[in-house]
Length: 245
Image (cartoon, rainbow, N blue to C red; front, side, top):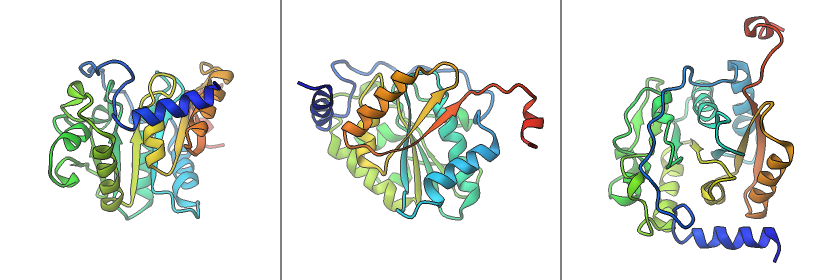
């Protein structure tokens, strides 16, 4: 049996229950806030959102940001892209924390994680009851929420799909931060519910063959890979001089 067939079969099974394969989700870790909302420059983030959202004629409105492996800075890139997109458009933008095991988007924006995606899946009420308005006039945050440690077979895919559809109706653009492709199938599940995925790689760390496998896994499951971001690059000259080139 081929690896692609195994992957599709695994993702299909996971569609019946949005949870990590074979284990219960532990209590979410608390991590230190990142020193900056993003690690890419402002110009790089603007180019990224223009390429993914604004210059595309296929009407991409909902995109998953995922990484090949942990530690690439995917959450920071997603947060920075959301801010850059909100600054480029007048329409409402929502950034969603679907990294259920290591939620950190609320730390990027300096907010709390009391209510969010997991609460919205388990509880009733419009999605607007679970999002937080951020200082930018047209930017909202849907944190991971307080119930990540309680996820189990009770969290059916149809409940998640309903909330994803609701987000698409309520907001013009939705950016979703998800776990690494190499660890869980969450990015595959979310990618199949959205318009595609962006892969975040770490400069001088992510191995080429590992990135290729992650891309192939997403595409084998029917997820469109919209592009890749090379994060944490080092520059031979100071950043402020590089920005002027």
